[in-house]
Image 1: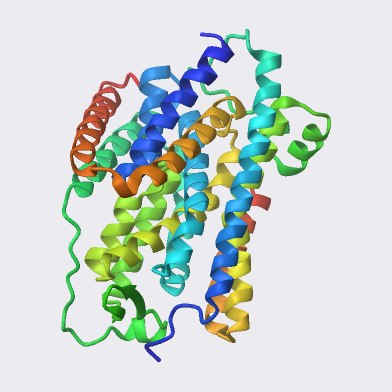
Image 2 (image 1 turned 60 degrees about the vertical axis):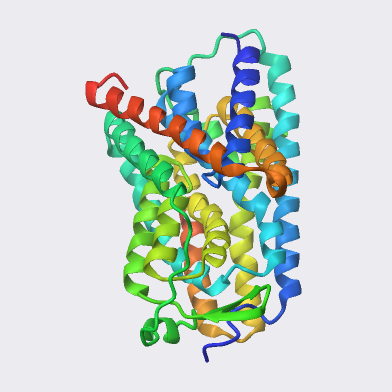
Length: 278
Length: 126
């Protein structure tokens, strides 16, 4: 394959990945690494570097729309970023010393979890527990706009949420993904933050988390311009198109189909990792 | 104390959102321009990404990338565009420091500065 062919094919693949990622809420980054490694035979370290770059592009690109809506809680985001950025640095250093077949297996497991969690119906589960003292100390409780006017909410279980965010950061730094699924797990399930607030706040955090490991990847030579260029441009274009058509799209079936594809890719990565052919 | 957890100045957030989008558009345009230059130069070459060799030093360090990009080296031009992209979330954190300072929320000025310090540290270390 010549450079020209490689660039065009990777750009098209990344565009489709970004489009499906935006439409299904799974994010484009999750399929970039399997796409590059399984379909194009790219070494997983180059694939992770390119994927991480595309994660920053979609996060920053979408921020403008999210910030206008007024859902994201900037204090929750900034406080939890302490955990995700430290985690991302840990993960990026771990990536250097972890065998690639182990990375492939971990990647497959995280992919499977992402596919599973994206198909669970989001539900807000308010509780009547007394407010969390950490949430009060850190001024994390907030308000968000609804059809019935502003609604206030309390943030719970701050220490476990912070711990899960560290894990999300480690996975992001180790695998070059946004780890949106783990971030949503921490904010929705543990901290009981309303769904819309956690999704938008998570988007804001993903770019900052990825930037924390990007510097380390760059210094280690994981970011190749010939791969990152078509991936970044493709995913960004796909995500922008996806955001345009999202309001009118029927995403349930699409999400299920995309999840099955992801599960199959995950299985192949795990198998190859176990057989040691990665 | 439980209220007012979003910034009082929502316009500041909208401004940051626009700034981020501008950063992404600029970075994408830069990468695209570098990419076209790169393809013109290398279109017929056979890239081999199967084995990991790591990038050469002039594509790994900020000052080297800037130096090479000024010589219009195609791969360094792309790499510089990617640096612009990586800078967008870092700029966002830097602006958040200002936002919290305007609100006189010194606890969050401290938290945000800690995040910013870590982000900058990863670029100058290793």
